[in-house]
Length: 120
Image (tube, rainbow, N blue to C red):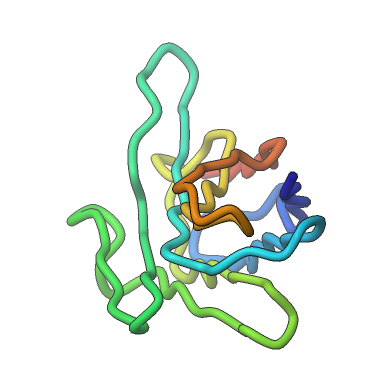
């Protein structure tokens, strides 16, 4: 099995920055893609940013130009740099790893979530 551990959430004022980390460990796997999702109170979980194994990134319109997703393959880690944060960015942020396991089956796993709160 592969597990994910997230870190980096917290409380920040509007206009501030945070950097989230998501590190994978466990059985050997082939990285296919990692997505960052967020869920605000009373709302559905939404995709915020994603990076695939070719380094291609995609972003939700609401975060383009403010958030950057990156990957460190040597550390099996993916990061989400969040700048110019707005109160609307408040929510629980989850990472989701899409991978191929050692038996060559496609799998996906979620991180535990980390709270981001942006005050006005």
